[in-house]
Length: 304
Image (cartoon, rainbow, N blue to C red; front, side, top):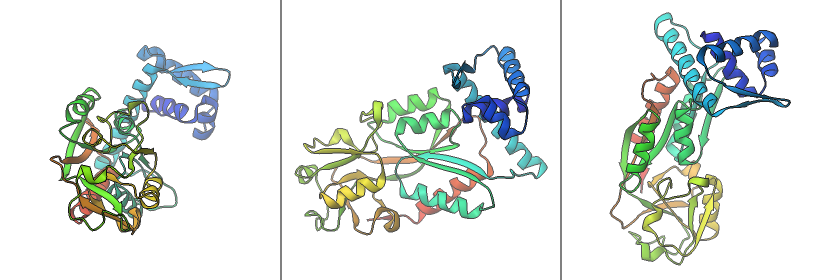
């Protein structure tokens, strides 16, 4: 097994075609095909299913690719540490729940490593996908929260995928509403106060249980519920429908709209917000910078 072979299988997986991958890497298709087949034979694994329309990744192929990405990342990190080399094109990916400080840190990263070419990705996505993204090497870092209600289930999932959780800070739950909301003048909001209003939550797909929720769904018996997929839609509905959501209380006026305010929620609970990453991997220089940027933004966070 060689690093070149690992690069070939990762490229083929990304492009969904060995011929396209070979073209992008400036090698012949027969050479790449032979190298991939030799790797599959050596490792006793079928990474791809060949079809008339291209290739499909098998279940064991997904697992193999996770290890392959990890090995290539570690090889790059070794070059950076010991040879003074850096990647020609900066590359980093993070998957996170919908937190403004995660976006702010991502902006800092791009500004720091701006160049003629780079490949940066931020995925504001579902909780289960965040864990999968990091486990399979699609993202170097994930940002999620643990609480007394989801900790047991998520911790088992994190350990099963050979990941580690590192806490960044603990937040008390807050209710996000608009400045024009009928409850805007209240100092503290109770669950009973919220019952007349639509409850906005982020949709979690097939894993749509309170264990994977970004909000404290099990604590609210709301008769009016709306699920959304993105931050902008959620805040537009918070403003337009006098809706609300429950989150950490961290406010960013530019990202969350100047019309959104946070009010303390009267409930006995807390959010332990932190990062997940692969247990046996070192962070790249981009991952290290992103983590430090997260901590900087958290240290100056505005909680109302």
